[in-house]
Length: 348
Picture 1 (cartoon, rainbow, N blue to C red):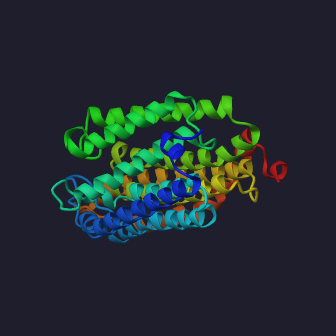
Picture 2 (tube, rainbow, N blue to C red):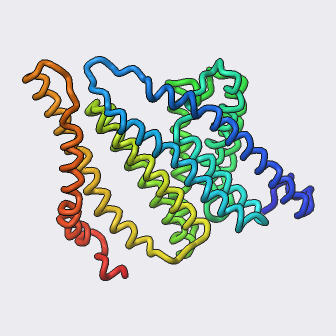
């Protein structure tokens, strides 16, 4: 199905227009991101600690920053690979720019640019392009068509809202809070609902298997985000929350890899086997992170009672214990997971 603009242009002219827009978005995204990185690092390294909370070790914060900066690099590599092999396809170029924008928007530096910054306008534009691209992907993947048909109007309404937000910051979810953040969530829930409907009712078996990679990658990111939220806002343990944020960045890299599998339709790995192993190792990791958070909080309270001072001296021994416990724990979890999911021998 041709869009009105595409119907007016020859195939060569259309592809040339798409490539021009592609290069322009790359330039805006990378320029604004690189401009934001120094401010973002300075804010994170010198961020004031809320009274009553123990600051995470500096080396863990640096590791977290490094993991965050690795996400856009991984996404840029995937984007370049897609552009290399799909450059003659406008949808391929869209898929390439979408994963690049995802990596840039999730890693953090864009959020450090204040509204009064001279680069604020260009940065907010890049953020909005990222949000529109992600929502559009949920509406058209993998058929390249807006299915159900109402998702076209959903995407257009969302793009219009993002455009208005550039002119009226108080309705811009990038800088505003409250009801506008809720509205942003509702838009994405609508797109996710359409994505689920398309998976259940529209796609054939091959397309479902392709889509499963995207679902898998998304589930990793969402699961890691929920774990980080519990650690940060539920337990208020900054050390464990920082470790949780590192896990979130690593799952974002895994999403980029899963996205590449979905786009190229690789058959090298069986998605069911990957899910089985992810549940095993993910459950072990989540258990150890939560246990680390609880023990870290308990050891801090004990040391404070005995010495009268706040100290993170137990952090390193607890990390060593967690690392040594990982392998035995995942061996115990594997039989439980194999009873719920097909075991490795069946899948292979």
